[in-house]
Length: 254
Image (tube, rainbow, N blue to C red; front, top):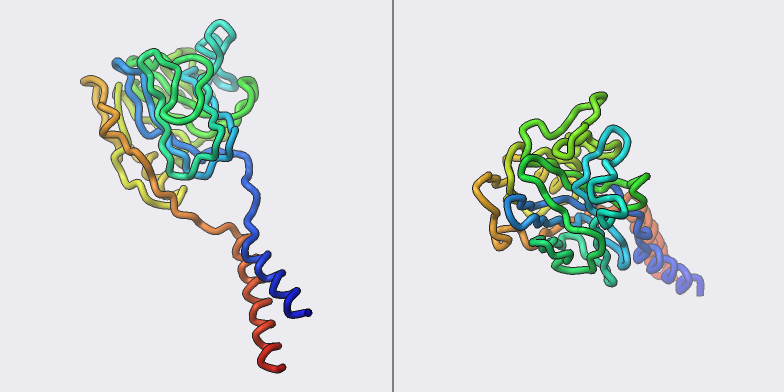
């Protein structure tokens, strides 16, 4: 009877995984954008995203400690562009905003307003939570030679931005693509979350131009995100193996 109970404990320990946490910086990343005509872009999920999660996107600049709220974020502008899916989104999935004046995604439901991406300099921020207290997930600046304004100087333009607290150019959660109107990530599409963020954050892994939009057919359609087991997962697996070893020894002694 004891052996059966221990076996059940071992199976439960080995199968138990940590509950999905709230999204944090680097859980998604922008991997393509066009500003000349279509005003479309794409992002990749670098973690599994639970069903009914809402992610907001805006091209509003971050000015010191707040968004420029009159830029597509106030009630008159329709609020931020939001994405939501009734089903879970697997890590590695690429979601495209169709642009061309249409508020729609390649998968999931869209609400809010289109992003009018400016070829004189603009940015895309992805975040969860309220506009007044955003939880930033990703940021990308493009189409401007000096688009990132270093603190403590505050950006005072729609075409430039400060880097919000929580995002980092060094960590790949904020990407500066320089003075190019259109671009897409062309680097490796397989790796851990950290490896892919590092590659996406390296401008050498992007193709960029000022000579018209890129066709979405050349954009990456999917990624493969290799998992790094959490410390608690290792602990549970070791506990399960230990119990199974104990059971094996008891059977030999019987």
